[in-house]
Structures are given as C-alpha cells and as structure tokens.
Length: 437
Image (tube, rainbow, N blue to C red):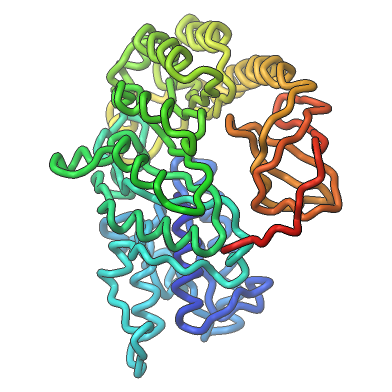
C-alpha cells in the first residue's frame, strides 16, 4: 500500500514541476512515507526522521513531509511537538496536505488547482512519474482503504481509518491509465481485499471488480491481496478459476495454528476452518500457490500452542509464509488487555524454527519446477539478469541480452532454490513486433 501511495505522491509532485532527486541532501522536498505495523518498522521510521533534522537545519527552505501510518488519520499534535522541523504531516494515501502546502499563495494553473479532497479520494486518472512511464510493468492499485475488522494485534484500523471501498469507476479509470502507460500486471490492494464492496451493498464485490478489470485491454495479469479466510467465498474462488488473466496465487493469512490464540486475536475462524479453505482452494484452482502470514510469540502463546502453528504449516505445505514476531502496538486491544509475556529470545527462537521449516517447504515446492517450461512476465533487469514472476508468483531470473521488459515469455527452469529460480529462454523473442503502450 505504501508503494502505491508513494507512486501517487511522485505523480502529484511531477504535475507541479518537480523532478526526482538522487539524494536527500540534494532535494527540495523530502517525503518520508512510514509504516508502523510492527515496532521494528516504527523504529526505522523514527531513525530516518531524526537523520533528516541536520539536513533541514543546514537548508531551512527544504520541505520535509512526514506521511503514512506514523501520522495516521487522527490528531498528530504530539508529532508536531516532537518534530518541529517537519513542515507537513500527511495521513496515509493522501498527498493533499503536501500539495496544499506547496501551492499556497501561488497563481496556479488548472493542473495545479486540484483540491485536497480530490487527492484524498485518490483520483483515478493516475499519471505515472516520468521515469516509470513505459518502464513500470507491474503496479499496485488500492481498492479498499483502511480496515474495520480490528484484530486485537493490528494497528491499521487506528492509523488508516475505517474500511472504505473506492468506487469501481475510479479504480477502472486508474487501471486504464496504467495500461495506457505500459503496465501489464495489476495487483488490487486492501488490508482485507476480499471485503471490497461490503460497505456498499448496492455496488460490486471483489469478484465483480475482477471481471471489470479483466476487460481492460493491455492488462495481462491480475492479482489481489491480502484476503481474509472469512470472506473467501465460492463466487470469488470461481472467478479466480475462470478468468485467465487472474493469476492462481492467493494470499490468505492464518496468523496462528492454535484455536485459543486465534480467538485471542479475534480472527473469527479456527484452524480446521483454515484447513478446509486450503483444501477448497486447491480443489477449485488446480496448481494454485498460497501465501500466509504467521505471528509468533502472541501474548499468552504457550510452547504447545506454538507447536500447533508449526505442525499446521508442516501439514499444509504452503508456498510462502510471511513470519513476524509479535510486537505491542499502541492503542490495540492486545496492548490494552493482554500481557506481552513471551520473551524476545523465545520469539526469536520460534521465528527461526518456522523460518527453517518454511525454507524446506519452499525448496520442496520449487524443486517440482525443475526442467519444466513456465511462462514468466519479465519486469526489470537486475545485475545483468532479467527478473520476472510465474503465474504462481515464483521469482525467476534469466540471463540474456534480449530486452524482455513487459514480455510474457516461456522459459525452461534450470535451477531452483527456496526463494527463486533460474531459467533459460525456450526460444528467442520476436522483438520486431511493435510494442504499444
């Protein structure tokens, strides 16, 4: 979500005539977009913010903009008092305050006179920053802002506000604009993306939205994240299975394998509910890859309860597990009512156990691709190798002098590891054909 927000800020600044800077020391404006989903992310944001103070002291005319979840959607006077050198404070997904600050008192043309409300609503006609136009292959499109589910560990509802579904017309306008600028893959984003449209019973749901995006010419691949087990319904599964542009990759967090821990998290399902969902996904979408999230060391989690999480992962053998050590987030239910009683050393021990297990599982799954021919959408060249992803979101590297950017091309897998694969071109691409952006 922050990647999408930052792209929008860059686009808004370019409309005002600004250009990207190579370093903070050379910039006229510095935007620090922040995440606070875990304590480590918040600590990193504060550290970077403190490092900007001497730059601002040397150049008083420099504009410093603090943005994102550290600011949140509510009162941030405490931040103004703590960081008086910050000029602008922007809530998540809202470049409006920065644009208003930069244009105050100026005689503005039509493009510059966009109101704060228009930016806050995330105007759909997104013009990519110049350096990304015709080069960005995969882009993120927020469709649900905020969250109202309020898991006991999660700070997102307090920092990004209540759940709001963007109008389908705005989303489609943005997708059309991205496709016209060369984007081939769209990922629809939401804290709980499969709740899209729940706040507007008369509008489309996520399955309907996928059908609409599927019709956009130029878009070749569609993904969505992150889902919640409780709203992965039959209609959505049928849509993923039936639409060829929607990739067979699902991100659906379990968070814990213990029913007691899940209840304390207020997740709203049991471990057996999750097992049945995974079985249904694999039956309805053959070859589907599945990613999950795990939190270790949640307040009160015993060794036996952690073992249930470990055993569940060993049983289900999911493609990806994003693992986090629990950290107390201010204002959450867990912070107010549960004691953070698992030591940091024990959290790290559990983290490493799950990490090692998942590495073994991922290596086992990847090994099945050895010698196989798969289609990869290539995004960029990194250290002399082209980087892309399969339909199941597996990372693939190919060495070639050909320009593969934006191409979906068959490759034969020659090496596999837990986190990436290497491959060779099956045939040389016909680059004489025109590329239309």
